[in-house]
Amino acid sequence: MKAGLEIGQSAEINILVTKDMRTEFVGETVHDLYSTSDLVNHIEWAARKVLIPFLENNEESMVSHVEVSHLTLTVTGMSVRVKATVSEIRDKKIVCDVEAYNTRGKIARGTVTQSIIEKTWLENKMKELSIINQLARQNYQVSSTTEQSKT
Image 1 (tube, rainbow, N blue to C red):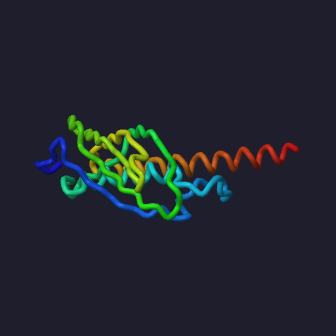
Image 2: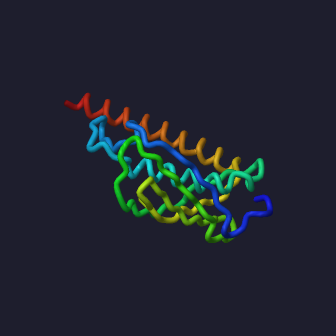
Image 3: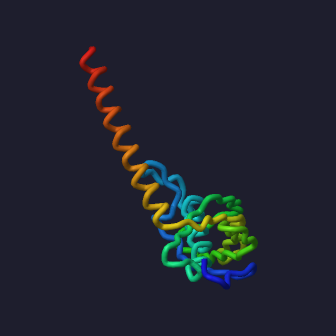
């Protein structure tokens, strides 16, 4: 990691809550409100924004822990400001305190922990998981075919 990252540094993002950010499950809208899953995505984005200037070309950041309290409602059409502030730096782990606000006040608070990793390590892990997935799917197909032939 490049030098210069310090406790207290922060980054913000501003978003407009749109209909595609509503709470939905399997394509069915539950209510016309900002979903917690989209809120978490935006909180992760703000935390990542803090680190981007400090990553070396061979490094990537990965969220390893998120803790968020979604405090109040936000309807579609409202603006949301998300702020992430570095609160802890330990080895290759960076913790950010996060807060989100709509026009009425604070809607969320929490922390995001990011791990700094080597891009080559990540690429190798992704290839490994892809191979494991392919083998598992082949095994599933073979066992399904075997079960069907027994019936």
